Image (cartoon, rainbow, N blue to C red; front, side, top):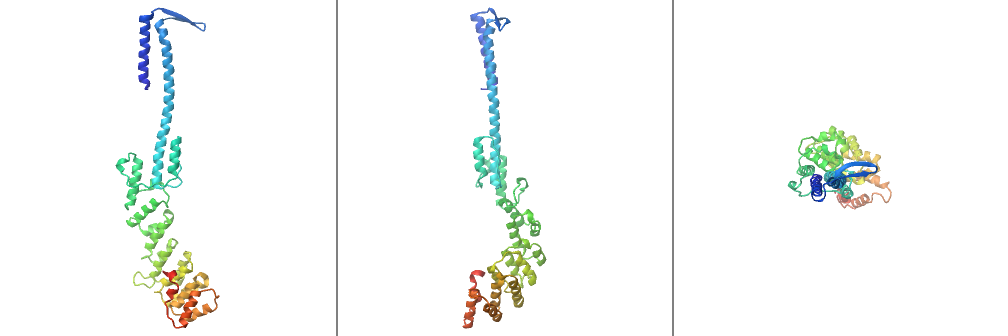
Length: 342
């Protein structure tokens, strides 16, 4: 009940009681001695009105007290409601380490569930969303999905956040920022995105810039670089020492080295052979690639020399190939390492 209405009704009731008593009961005056204090004579109607007025004051105080408590409780719910909206917005954005504080039990449970849940807005009509923050978040996500570039600075997302990565990918594809601009600031961008950009970059980049940003190299980008050695277009002239330095950028296994040798099929045979001879002297993982190179170049004598001093369990696929060669059975060496170069 509204206090104003309650006050009006109460005062009317008190006035009515006073009028009724003075009119139909008694209009005399009465003096009361209360705890030794003589109260001046008052009309009986006033004495009838005083308890009602005291009751009115008490009831108003009671109503006001619980109204204040209710307003505080309602304010908590309003704050928690706004916190839930922030919680949903952050979940849509994929923020990490989400931990929102709530003052009410029901919202604490709901907020805890959302903070530990990944949400993806899908087919949500913005006209149905009345909250500006949620609608702007959904609009931002939809724009990124469409390939547009948006401002995410106010969202304070990490560089590895999927939305940030896609937004920067959109920026790169729209040519609003060059590949080198990304590569020269590696701490600002996701490592996988930089690897993608570097893969495009090495298709036409000069050798000096390839080496400059080689920290972003992956196996795929390395094979693109190797494909340019002695190619008809975008040719790279590259020394064995430089190639060896590029190889050292990655963690390569024996299979990788064999794939690299196959990718260098256009390289001058002598240079290719010297490259893998040098690498195999420094890294045992490259020995099989050196054998593959020798057999691929039909350099049988040096390959035989290596196989002769090897252990019986080593290089069995190459020993099988050599045995077939000795029986005048001509097979492509790739058949013996097919699973490694495909």
